[in-house]
Image (cartoon, rainbow, N blue to C red):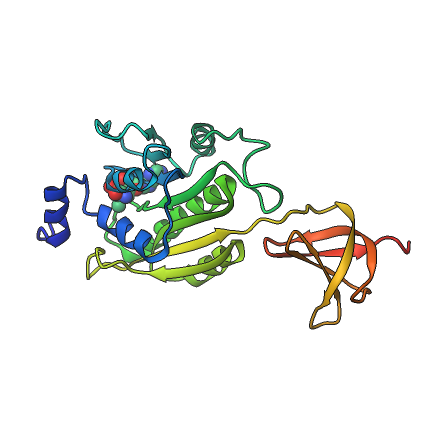
Length: 272
Ligand SMILES: C[S@@+](CC[C@H](N)C(=O)[O-])C[C@H]1O[C@@H](n2cnc3c(N)ncnc32)[C@H](O)[C@@H]1O
């Protein structure tokens, strides 16, 4: 067993359930993820150090929901924390989380389009049971990180933030690229409170992107700019929609096609 270290002792002294508490504090200090009044969902939350730090950060008006395979002991001094026992790789656990967060699992949950979900921040410190074989543990860690990402996409409100742990290794760059598509920016970091020998990194996704239009929508837009390929660009509530065959100043009716979180494509239908 690892020697009891600085953060282990600090957690004992300051009354946190785990030394991991300091990782979340450091991640939050770096990117201001959790604010007063937020609803936070914590995946892989046992024994509960992150839940305690999140509850302090959201304050009495906030809400913190923790999920783990293990039972999480009740918190006597934080009545804003609710816990669930379940496996995040199972759809029914995700449904229970959505329900606990005040969403219904159809209309309110976030997708790439439309309004976002009911949650401000999703954090995941999930880690597999260690087999000792690094490549296997790393693949399992990446699988859990992807489950957390899928959950975050379902739950997060527009502009919401996401923190996820993953072990360094193959396919992590692809995972980061996928997260980058859905957030304004992503920062990778290894907090000081991570053990020196640890290969864990955390991605912090800031500002969940959602688009105000959906594929198939028909609307009138004004072309306000020109893209590098010569396509006209319309702005819908600040969201950029590329419309081939148009020029700046045109007012045209379009049908929305492919929708990405931060831009989309539309075709002109007023000349059909
Ligand atoms: C490093 S610990 C989390 C520590 C926690 N952040 C804290 O501050 O106390 C990782 C947790 O992930 C949980 N976990 C692993 N796989 C999971 C899964 N499929 N669903 C839910 N929790 C999972 C484990 O049970 C374990 O408690």
